[in-house]
Each structure stands twice: as structure tokens, then as C-alpha cells.
Length: 118
Image (tube, rainbow, N blue to C red; front, top):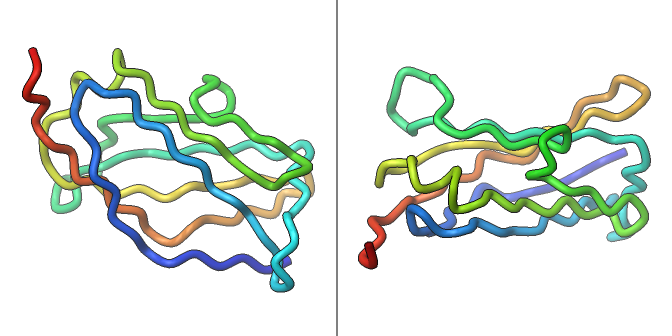
């Protein structure tokens, strides 16, 4: 099983719902079967002390896996993102397969912007 992901930066607003979808593909471009897989993400300030300011997971329902299509959808609700201060955060998406294999994306940077509407 192989995977590939380039590091990227996503711009989001504090207090908005953050929604993104990742597609997990094999070397031939076919979806990887994600049956029985769990996923999690932990957001930390890029140059901070490593403590998490936001955690998402399939257990919490903030990451949703479509097994056959090989996708993981992120839906961080506004109630969770409203407490995230404007800054640059770093995370990755980690998958744990039923076999015990763990795969992660490259680092993903989230630039959180101030929400202008209060």
C-alpha cells in the first residue's frame, strides 16, 4: 500500500465550520479501501509547545470515512473552532487500519484568520 500527499496550507476563519475531504489513493490512482479504518487529527500551534488546541477523530464523528471511495471528510464544527486563536497551526491526518498499519499525510498547515463578523 502506498500513499502520497504534498504539504499544503489551508486558510480558514475562526468560528467557521472547517470542512475538507481527503482522498486516499494507491500508486495507480485507485481508492484505498478504508473499511474498518479509524482516523484522527490533532492541531498544534506551528511554533508552539506541541500541545493540542483542537482534536478531531472518527470516534467523535468530526472525521467521517467513506470506505469504498477511500475518502475522509473533516467537519470541525463552529462551536469547536470559535475557541481557536488566529495563528498558524500544523496537523496531519492519521489512519489506523484493522491490521495495525498506521499511515499519515504530509503536514497540513491551517492559517486561522480572525472572524470579522461577531
